[in-house]
Length: 522
Image 1 (cartoon, rainbow, N blue to C red):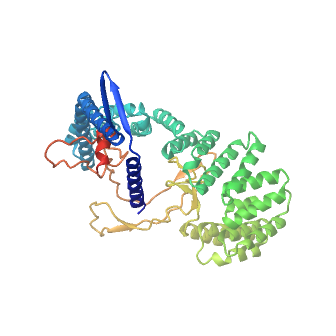
Image 2: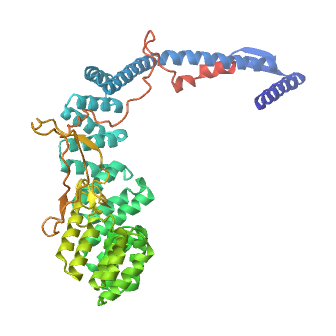
Image 3: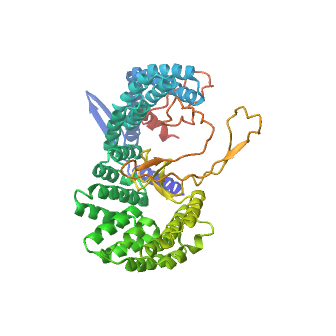
């Protein structure tokens, strides 16, 4: 509507201008080289307009003639680029389909038609990976790192190739370079963090975590930082006790439910005489995550207390989370030390019908200390051998007698307080072997959780779990191509059309004088 109004207003103004000139006639006289031309003002204006139009037409024709070589060259370059794009598309689709021959052929064609194109380099690298040519893949990834647009992709490929050949030093260098180029890059920051953790460089790990802060969720960042601070505190406990205590307190502030941090902070504060603050931290941690380490630290928060005073403290702590096994065990252990055998039995009474291993072992200790009844002791120890397991620090199929910041597979905060193999309860077929003639062979076995034996920290602090017999695992096939990116869904221009693709009209040609003149009459 606005355009219509503007058009009508423009026409009215032009008409008014012509009427105004017609009402005020005048003469125009031109004398040049002995000639004299006299005409009216209206005719002179129309002649000037006609000369301008003719000049524009002549200029457009001349410019088209002068630029014709450039336009022809642009046409062939565009045609070559489109053929290269189609070759890259065919190659990426062939890689996704597993057609090695077509992928290598398309990569060679794309390298000839579009040298230096980022997608061409990617196609070359992945076709080389598919063919098992790791040297060719690394050369393509190195070439990517020379271009700003593909630098991170090339570093990613070099990192994965270094991992595939088990070259930790090269993988570390590539990851550090990628993290320096893009601090928010998740895989690079995680690789640097894992390397620092494997080297127990907790200060470097904290610095690496700070660099990747923007790529992590807020809660995940706080948890990881708390774990690293706890690891640093444990490493400094015999070197700089003040720095260790400060690191543990910061860890407790970030993750109040982190048991190792709260237990360590409580012990260090108790040693320095700040029992009130130590009790506050341990109480808060117990409410969030009842754990025997918290109970042990809380029992000894006041040095020099009697066994009865520790029992009273344990009873008050267990009352904060009633009906909890860890609280009952803490009370029973404190009562046994205070020789309050009735209180110890009362604390464990709700769990005696189906005792866990720790409950049965503690009952055997109570029987031995109170009565010295060897029969009852043997009975409870037998029940302990048949009892269900208790939670332990476990990660990656390995249990430890103490918390560790990194799992055997290199995962930060990998150790969890849980029953080992509790999630396994399926039946596996047994390996086919000739059965004895006298008795039939069972058709299957059921895996049950098996508790590992306790190991002293001075000899071997980490003990692998003993598992039930199962069939040997088959090797998992490894893909030949590292999926750095997905192949594009759009295959490009329709290759089924006859003839070569025509070049699109460039911006310069679309905005030329001749085109502008044509647009005036549309």
